[in-house]
Length: 81
Image 1 (cartoon, helix red, strand yellow):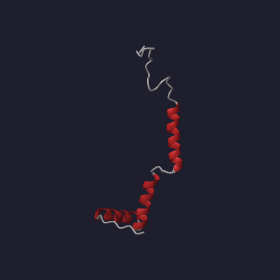
Image 2 (tube, helix red, strand yellow):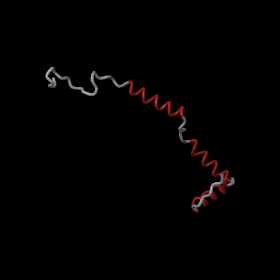
Image 3 (cartoon, helix red, strand yellow):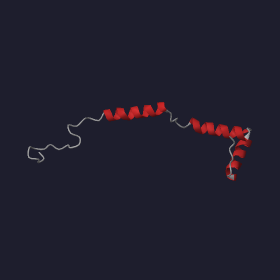
Image 4 (cartoon, one colour):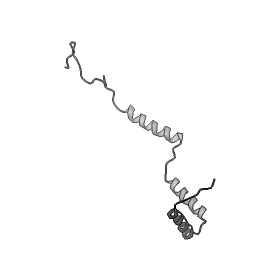
């Protein structure tokens, strides 16, 4: 599918990149996109699973409290000890 770029500033930048690199405009854009993608993490299922596993491992290291919802101890008539 063709890509149309309506911004003349962007078009000029692509033409300058192509001229400086000796590549066609298409090849210059492809290399620029590839370079940007190479520095970004993928958001595939394996990556998501690894991040979730790391978060769950951190949560597992939090010590359990006897009653995390109510940390105060109460006596038989309902007063804090």
